[in-house]
Image 1 (cartoon, rainbow over the protein chains, first blue to last red):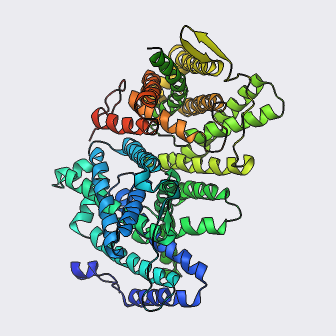
Image 2 (cartoon, chains in turn red, yellow):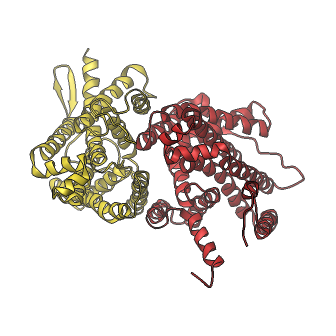
Image 3 (tube, chains in turn green, yellow):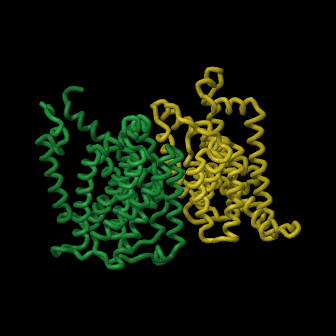
Amino acid sequence: MDLVESYAEDLRFARKRVTRALLGLLLLALTVFPLVAPDWMVFLATLVALYGIGVMGQNILIGYTGQISFGQAGFLAIGAFGFGHLRIWGAPFPVALLGAGLASALAGVLVGFPSLRLKGPYLSIATLGFGVAVYQVFVNWEVLSGGRSGLAIAKLKPMFGMSTTRYEYYLYVLLLALFTLATYNLISSYVGRAFIAIRDSDIAAEVNGVNLTRYKLLAFAISSFYTGVHGALYAQVLGHIEPQIFNISESITLFVAVIIGGVASIEGAILGAAFVTLVPKLLSNFREFVPVVFGLTILIVLIFEPLGLFGRWLKTRLYFQLWPFR
Amino acid sequence: MDKLLQYSLTGLSAGSLYALVALGVVLIYRSTRVLNFAHGDVATLGTFVAFSLLSDKFSFPVALVLSLAAGAAVGITFYFVVLVKAQRRGANLLGMIILTLGLALIIQGLVVWKWGAEPVALPFPISDTKTYKMGAVVVSQLSLATMAAGLVGSLLLYLLVQRTRLGLAMRATSENVMAAQTLGIPTRMVLSVSWGVASALGVVAGIFLAPALLLDPFFMLDPFLKGFAAAVLGGLNSLPGAVLGALILGVAESLTGAYLTIQFKNTLAFVIIIVVLLIRPEGLLGKEFKERV
């Protein structure tokens, strides 16, 4: 029987023995993967890991706090270029990563201020405007963006004699795991519940003592911290960044990942990240159909499966749990 | 002084195109409360239809009418096939906005697939090199035609909304859908007309923009965002506001480009959006929106 006897037990990360075993298996698979898979697969997995962090961050904002943002590319650009400049000035990788995240979080707070007065469609326009404005500033301000040639970022020196691809894979998967754990804890804490209360009804939340100003700004700060880290990691993987990467379609890709993966689900963020990274690779000979697939998937998800890929997974699991009965 | 006039005129010509885009955005927003992110892409599609027709030696008026019809058909189909279905399943407003985003992506991909991503020139009967001199101000035939298109489009829309029974039904539906239904107005039909008209307006803007820019699958993105900004500036639920906002934006942009900085000319629109939303979220002519608990 599956009885929860105390609150602490309910909050435990992996309650059942099966879950723990499966989790162990997953970790094992992730560890062995780069040793057996070819390099290009490992690189794809690395991309999924770093996108996972960004999508998770955006999910905190869209899925949990209910604030729509179409300006993620702006935060990505700030993270990536912040990281690039810090690396060029000689900051070590972890410091530069943290700096990029913090710079992005600061921008997030600034964008968060309009969100105190705006909601729904108005907020989405304001953030869209922010994203485009940041893009244009980076394109036109060569001191920030390194001009036409962009910024070159030194490759990481792999430890333990690994190849760069493998080393980056392990590092990024580890970071993704850390961010996933942090997100789980955040969502089940007071802060996470405040976010969810704001999403469901901000007036009711305020009446119940949630400080709207503080928590909306916090949601923006946290989510753009994640996005900034995503930008930094992306810059590191590419080794070379230019402002053209962070255009409006990048914002839309991240948004699509949140919706397809599943709104307000942490596992869904990773699934969505996998979707938006893998589909373009699968369709690499039919590049023009990538947006068509994204668009159709959005329509199908919103009309037939509002919880996205994660909802599909939950239903499949439920089906097998109850198997002979329906 | 002449320079000022000249730049203002250029701005007005750009602004009248923004006005056509903004009118479409506002028309859809005030009737269905949906921000149509696919507006620019529907316009692109319509413009490419016009391009194909003109290349096949159809005369310009025929191509214009057929491409407007194509744009309207896409808008109406999307309304009936996707939005109505989503509404029946209880999609919220955010969901519907995301649906339009999905439509935008689909159209974008299909346009690239059908017409390719290479820029092409639209064969257009009105030249942008032939100019007229009015006092000290020089104005090209194209920008005159553009202003005329903006004026005629706005005027026809005004007549439709204010002077016809259909327009009355549209106003009633945007005021209160339930009450309109109770009074026997076929609201779905009326709303689909709004979608069709709005999409057709977008196509007009696209066709008049194409000769000034080159035609590629993403050429409407920038004008669409500007039209959006204009709609926000004027008030998202006010049709006259959309025109006013668009003209102000066009002139402000042109003057910024002339006197302040050419690099950040395009950024101005987005700065305006953010400032307007912060100071006066309902826009210049919009009605204040209040939330009921």
